[in-house]
Length: 80
Image (cartoon, rainbow, N blue to C red; front, side, top):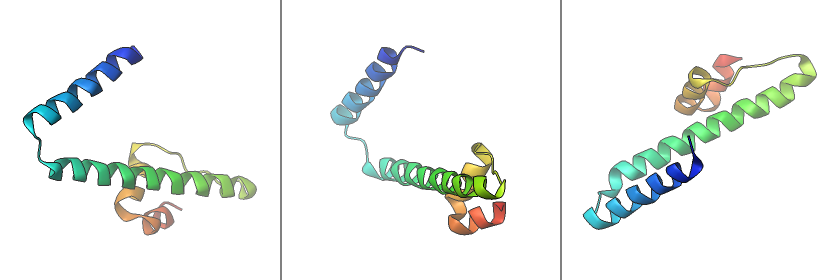
């Protein structure tokens, strides 16, 4: 997919949100979810970097990212 198409699509969505006045509650939920997924993947990455010294690896995929984003640090501990 071309990057200009993606950028134009995002700008069109922003324009539609500005014109029609979308409620901020769904956007806040999406922002929180993206933050938690990013934090979970970062935790998995840190575990993998430290794990290279001990010959240990946790694959980063949709399942592990979901577990760590929902459970946080206990989720990473559960995966270990």
